[in-house]
Length: 49
Image (tube, rainbow, N blue to C red; front, side, top):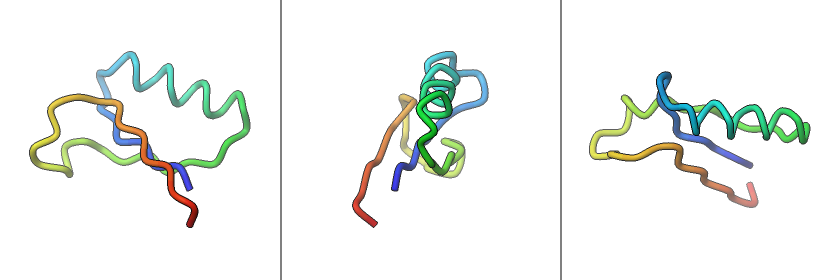
C-alpha cells in the first residue's frame, strides 16, 4: 500500500500524485494538516499491507 502525505499548495505533491496515476498505482492521499509536527511534504509511505 502506498500512502502519500500532501499539502494542497505543494507542487511536488501534485507531481508525485500525477506520476502515481500515470503508473496506475493505487495510493491513499492524506492531508498534512492532520499530522501535527510534519514540516515538509510530500511524504511517501510504502508498506506490504
